Image 1 (cartoon, one colour):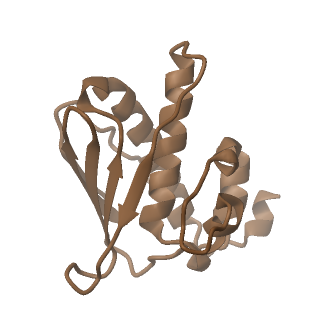
Image 2 (tube, rainbow, N blue to C red):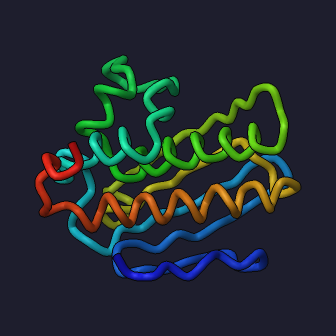
Amino acid sequence: MKQIIPIQPLSQSISSEHFSLRLSPTAYELKMTLKMSTPIFHTCDLPATYTILQKILPSIFTSQCFNDNKYAFTQEVKNTEIGHLFEHILLEYLCIERMNMGYEEAVFNGVTNWNWIEDPKGTFHIIIDAGWDEKELILTALEKSIQLLHLILETKNISSSIYN
């Protein structure tokens, strides 16, 4: 896995070989545009996703997920859009980081939208209800989320059985 350059506090975007992520923070929410640089847009093309999440971020499977099929995230993660996966990873890391700060509970919400008629295929618009006044929390969670998404994207051709 290639070294990922940490997000700098004043940086508003990051680019990698897999995607670009533009941040548009406000006082009340973090808006992001994720643009895939690879032709992989769904987790069904990344069979190791579930197993990697089980090993690295197992608490993600207890998160609530609202989707058209009313699937729990444990089911939805097997065939969902990469932007939606990134949203859930970031939400989970935000909760973990807040708990690490000594809070007894942490809840963050998000939504991912895409319209590949108006935008290029692989473009996702993600909104998280974390305001930029919590910039350090957000940046820490973002860095971990980006690293995990890179790991998932880079293991697309590796059988998930190696992670068991």
